[in-house]
Image (tube, rainbow, N blue to C red; front, side, top):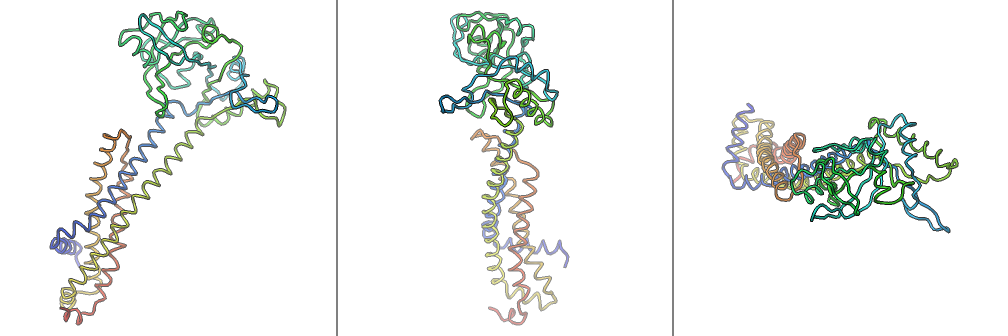
Length: 406
């Protein structure tokens, strides 16, 4: 039997009951659109997480102070301030898997310019902070090593602070006061936005950590953390091991004893977050696929009804020479055409739904060709799987009994 002729016959058969055919395909339409929409939400979440970590730097490592025990009571992480600028210097000089190092201290303070003021985060960092954090300068400059060593009273504003204090005016060269100490603005960082909805990364002021220690915090012998950038993401684990070895020697930690510091690898955190979003995508896609299964059952049900309604037609076809495989192919083609047409409509509806979700809910969605192909392939498979039994039942009818059927 000619396949094109079979498809035309199938379309005519489905066209006799347009509303029933549409309602039957509706399960496939909803299933395919749900799969595409849900997978696009999962893919969008994954892409958003990847972009967030890429903006921070996947070869980034954080060195934090450890805990301290006092009279048998164990303090939490960071309760023992034992990191020094010399620790950061030793890491830079001795760890060949490390590219950049930035000592770090932080606090909050009220910032005043003219008749405006703003409470913000004060970040005392090293000269390589922008390179470590993948943070570009919007305009102006970032402070250099000389400014750090001499503890100059200069600062670089985050975008949020700049907008609140200067309201669009050029801040370069202007003097602001932090805890009554005058600071000259030399640059503004590009906007990075919120971090996971918890805080605005642009709501900060960066200054040399030496200046922050002496002028703002008042403690110059300790730093709160060390930000480290590995040479590459591949060598980030090696860099972490080198940092641990260097600090254990410097802090005179005996073999087998617990470290008094913590080193966190951002690439491991990024991989864990990516794996979580991957599981989320699979879960959402799996839940949406249930509606495809329901749609397939609907196709099987309607095709069985169709076989019952067309028993006499089947008998006539067989009496004029149609073979079992011709009848099987005809009814199977009807089921496939029904599911494929539903799949096409569902793809368009799924893409539209994902865009509407992105527009109204503000969620990032990403419709991939792979998700579309998978949904379409699955819809065709549903037609074959659930259409085979009714088609086989039709092909096995006795022609004589079929012709007698009223």
